[in-house]
Length: 239
Image (cartoon, rainbow, N blue to C red; front, top):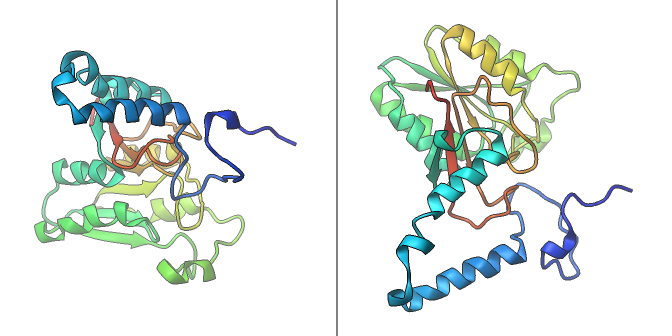
C-alpha cells in the first residue's frame, strides 16, 4: 500500500477520502488560516502595513510558482486563472490575417475561446481529432481512445503552412491523456510554430518539461491547492 503524497494532517478532511480530480484541490489548513488573518484586516484598513503585508506577495508567488514548474521567477506573470493567461498570449501574439491556431479536439473552453475570439481578426481556430471517431463534449465518453494511439503524431501531422501556434493541454480534462511536451514542442520549434500549453490539470502534481514550450498557463486551485482566482503565466525568455 502506498502512502499519501501529502500528510493528511495538513488538511481538514474530516471523514472524507479526497481523490484529486479536475475540479478543485483542498486548501491546507495553514494556508486558510494565513489568508483569513490577512483578509480580516480589510475590516480595518488603517491597520494595514502595505509595504510589509502586500508589496511582497506577487514576488513571493512568482518564486513559489517557479519551483512548481522548474522555471525562473522572472519569466512568470501573476494572473487570475488559466483563461486569463491564455487570453494574454492570444491578444499579445503577433498574428496576421490568414494565420491559424491548431488545437486537439476536446480541449477545455479555457483553451478554445481565447483563440476563437481571434476569428474577427482573420485568424482561424482549427481542431484536430486525436483518434478516428473521436467526439467531444457530452459524447466524449462514448469515444474512448484506442490503445497504442500516437496522439502527438496526429497533432504534428495536422500542422499546415498557415499554422502559427499550437495550443494543447498538458493533461487533458476530457480523457486524462498526458501529452509529451518535449516531442510536440521540439517539432513546433523546428517548424517555426509557437507552442502554448494549458497546464492546470498537471501542475502541482508533476514537473513539466518547458524546454520547448513558449508559454505555460495555469490556475492555482487544483494541484497547487490554492483558492479560486489566482494563477500564473510562464513565458520563455525568447517568446
